[in-house]
Image (cartoon, rainbow, N blue to C red; front, side, top):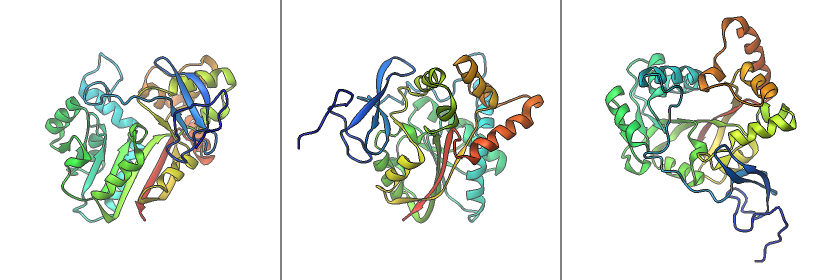
Length: 305
């Protein structure tokens, strides 16, 4: 079938959600280099043009805070930024039997394991982690069973979760269907990942918004989800949404860095943690953002159809 095209359209790339070939180029720059970012004209899905999958076995570093910090200190600091997400995972686990079987997808250096064991001591967790160095580390540091691929798993799990991993999946529907093969009929999946339709995108002026988006677009993330596009994608799988919210973990200080200076806080921790002098102001900011559904993270629980 011949495709109708115009000068802003990508000729050879199909939207994975609706199948359309009609895409607008919404940015010609990402964090690392000049590169086209496309938006499907039919369903609004945003994705990188001509995406080449990264080699996560070696190239992608899951912890980037400060070269002067030990790995253990990095894990502790990262675990603090994951507390709200892991509280949700903890609540899902505690609602089950004592023998709940838990799987983390994309365990990185073990920050979530550390955080969850603060909430549920001696919690047993299996992990899938592509990065060889991280996998070796968490095996030794946390005494877990870790695997390189879902294909290597030989049991079924009650709770499956992953923080900031879903946006890395090159074939997310296939991944969801793979997770169904290691699930029971009552399994719940929890994912947290970036919300493209966040408060910054909605409220920054054009110049700072462009800088913000050019920073957010980067080689590790082929896809950028909103509530609407994620819902359409899940509907193509064997799962359905049980609960959907957004969580704002970046602080009001980070927001004003973008609003005034057009750049982020120095690192992840600086962007999420504030001092006591403005903690109440920051709390009000986060409550407002989340109430309006513009949190910078999508927080979603899935269940089997």
